Length: 259
Image (tube, rainbow, N blue to C red; front, top):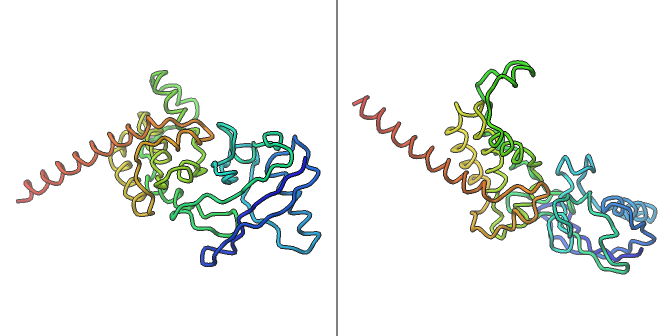
């Protein structure tokens, strides 16, 4: 199979970028998208040209690093897969394929297709640790957790923090990501002691990192490689509202007591 790639090239976030065209020739249809980029980069290297910089690690849909916008879609044309799980048989022979980085103010471009997604790490860090002593592995079976809650928590724990939800949202909102992280512990007994503090801290950090607001367009759910439901955003909003009210009442109570 033969393709023409239109790839975004940009040295860094301070330098303007541009789309450049490259041929991808004799590509095996069973190659993954990243393997195809490897072939193109090998040819560029042989020609003493700068190879295309792109992020990757596991190449198994686990790490979330292979964050590419392929033909205008975060992670490409297939559903519930990451960029590394897209195979060239998904494209027509002779097609022109446009490859761009995830775009968001919170994701500054480092080089070409690589963006800095450490803002998501800082949101997780702001959530802090849990204070509950969970003991050893066998002790987990002693905690009575309903099957429905356990499955819901497991579903949102699938989030790999790739940022596709941010890239697909017209507002560059991180609400789906944050809702998954908040819901994961919010559903489990181990997460209850810090539940209110956690949701307030994570939402505050999300706002400080310049992510946009959610306007319920559901692009985030559509492109999520792990199928995280947008229903979790409603749970996040509810938890944040309740935590904020509790915080207001606590401050008033402390103020009254101190007077």
